[in-house]
Image 1 (cartoon, rainbow, N blue to C red):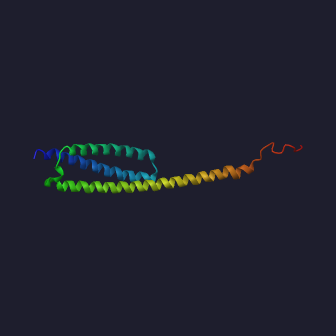
Image 2 (tube, rainbow, N blue to C red; image 1 turned 135 degrees about the horizontal axis):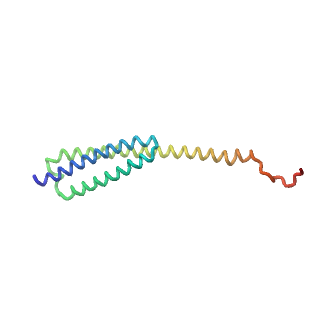
Image 3 (cartoon, rainbow, N blue to C red; image 1 turned 30 degrees about the horizontal axis):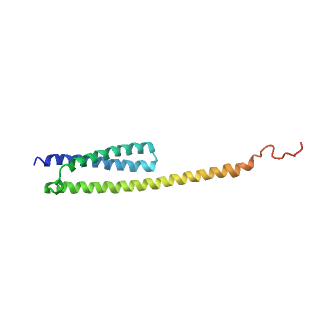
Length: 139
């Protein structure tokens, strides 16, 4: 049983990190429609730290061969696997929302740029007449 205690500790750490990742993903999904890039960058930095912690826990669990087949841990392992899949699904949805928002921003910028180009190059160009345009004019 002494071999099971560090594995349970690692699984507890993993569960806590997954809960933090789930909360981070939900926060990220709130920032996307608001277009708050500073807050979104902060959330993504926090997510990177959590992912590093999760990788460290997974490396620690890899030191214990055969722990996945222990019957006493099967239920917790299944719970953690389902949680990971849910987080991956929600993160994928957040990524799709971010891509759609990026495309909307690009379309807005493109329409504004096009309108500005039309105004500057075609409309205002004919309003102001350059001096010296008619060299042979008397007067």
